[in-house]
Length: 514
Image (tube, rainbow, N blue to C red):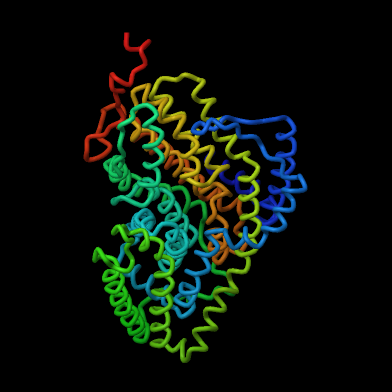
């Protein structure tokens, strides 16, 4: 056994010895509450880099905070964004799954893709699935497992390949995603503290993220085929596994069902385009922006799955009345019971961790510590990537972390000759790498439940050990490409933006201009 496998096995064993994930989050809630009491008593605080306000750790064990916790319990659960998204999509996706549409569709797709191209196809689909925002985790990841199972390969490997692709897709894609304006808006504010006229361009990371896409597809494929899948071994189908074992040719009724589902998909695609393409379409904002369309993706996916799954079920005979559709949807929601309980514990941990301000203190303190090292620009960029990857284990929101870190890193790197576009890109590379291994990632518990459909004993340690090779590979690949771009001064976007930056003479402090 190789050293790498031994280390991954140790991670898996240690992780699987932990209590149930629900219990883990309850324990973490207790740890955060006790830590908040101790740190508050010690007067731990940081200065906010934008407002200059002093941020102190909040004691969560005061009467007022405990009252807030108890009063807001229902609101914290219903306000947990991933829960609503998951349940809405799974109403439709559950019907599509239980009528047999997904299994038949994946078998049809597998028959047209060679086994050699299956993994890169899934990784690429995961990367591009980021265009559906968080829906990529809900829809694309379980489909990866279905595809591998249909091809006779380990379904968890297929799930892991897509999961890694979706995570990397947040900072690697062939098109500009919704993340760009979100992060560059924060960058612009931070950069203007050094250069008043600096203006963002949402394409200023595009050349890099475009080039990173095929590289990560290759890296993800190699990790999957030579590390993850061999380690998982041969999949043993559970005795009560619901999906059909036959992955061969489709029956006549299955072909008919896929045809009906395909036509319905075409019609619904045309309808969505009609509501989106015209400048006055109903899925456009008043200013013509596509915000309403992106916000509607979850609802659209639910309807697509529901209609296509229903038509497929009628064709193959698994749906004979409206009652059958309701029962299938009900069974799908019953399958999500475990996730709802887990979401309750996770939502409260995230809410309390944020309310304590411990996450903010860690983020700002880490950034200031790195700044104090006074490293040269290339090493500082690498240090920033590593710091962000570490902070991502404690603070999940990409925009929230950048709102705290940008006012520190962007001006500091500008003074060292690194552009705001470059510092934003470095942040994105660190943020993407550890999404797939942090328990604070809102969809990690859902991915675990997907995996347990195929391997019931698959635990949190198993999932983290499975995803760790992808995480390390993505991190090393991203740092390497950042080094190449920095060393050769390659453009980051179409307007010529690069890592290198010169502060305008008028902006330079008098003592440095002499």
